[in-house]
Length: 166
Image (tube, rainbow, N blue to C red; front, top):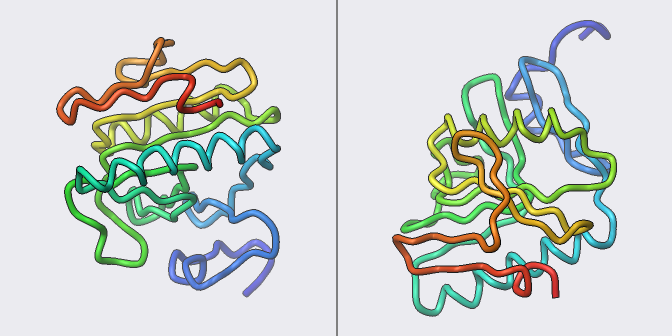
């Protein structure tokens, strides 16, 4: 394969990367922002929050899972939560119930917004952005909206800043 030849989705899915996993867009590998301590800590707290809820609800939280948004687009949310069933495939091609992106210092807001909108149009019911540096949380419905807490009303779940950042 020449240097300019695009990578097939099959080749991408069979590839592991020595550093941070990459996303796949139309034959091209896309670098992801390097997480820092606050990003990683927040990611762990978010997963722990949903793991605790698994005792009462059929929730299946995962981190950094490759998801087939469409045949030539594979994105990797920082945290995803499946409900009411656990995925039965290695690389899910159906939307999770929640997709969460956590900001890193070198993230470009336009790129993050585009990714959040992609999740939303794919059919993810709850798309969230969490900024551990400013300790702010956002939902993505018809654009980004800062919120005091993240809610899943149909399951009576509320994630507060204390849950995400402490």
